[in-house]
Amino acid sequence: MVQVDHAHPGHTCLTGCAKTYSMGRRGSRALVPRDFGIIQEEESIEEEAAKHFNKERRQSSFCLSKLAPAPPDPIEGTYKQIQCHDYEGYLAAIGTGPLSRVMVMRAAVVISITQELDKRWKVATETSIKAKSMRGYATYTRKLTENKFKPGVPKPELVEDWDQRILVTKLTLNQEKDGFRLLLEHEADKDQKFASDSTTEYRLEEDGDILVVTSTIGEVVAWRRLRRQEGVRDQGAGPRRHSIC
Image 1 (cartoon, rainbow, N blue to C red):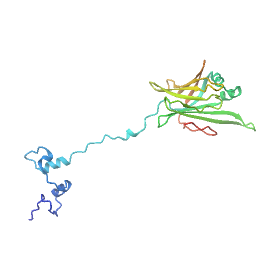
Image 2 (image 1 turned 90 degrees about the horizontal axis):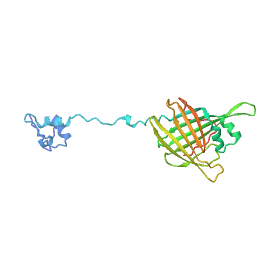
Image 3 (image 1 turned 90 degrees about the vertical axis):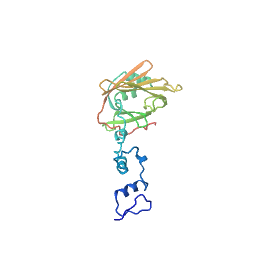
Image 4 (image 1 turned 120 degrees about the vertical axis):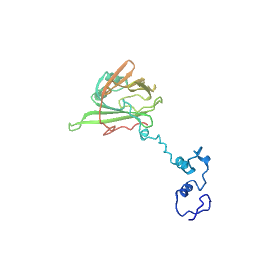
């Protein structure tokens, strides 16, 4: 029987034995005891090597759930107006004419609040104005106003057609136990005829389904209550205005 010297660097093993495979994994380097620490007398270097290379692989802490986006804030959603108080007085204070006030008070209002991936908050207001066509049919003209605000950063605001002011608005977030309360501070251009500053606050009632929008200008404090619309996507139809980003 031919003896093969596995420790010799130039040897050729035709049997494919386990020792040849193990040496190939180590780059044909001979095993020495110091590679594996203390070896018991009854154990061979090969047995200790098997224990060293066959250790169970440590499980990774990576989890796909860490990549999932954070859950939405409770105030995010789409709401439809169901009630208002003294809003006509607020419209008069911002420069809305008498006929326009009647039109706005009869309109259906839907407000959508969402937080974008870049942490900006989008506030969209869709106003469906009732009217009649030339032939007497009832029609709806929809106007959509969108603004995106970064907390603490003032920016020009796109206002409704019936608001005669030029505004620079800053968003402030107030943390509540069940989510955020949004406060918009509107600073008006003092060179205009209507130049009163105002604030708009968005907050949820305790049940989480009613959004209360409080608008304050001077001594006028108006509020609107809107009910959450389940399953309504943030989209509009018909003529609309573009948002300022």
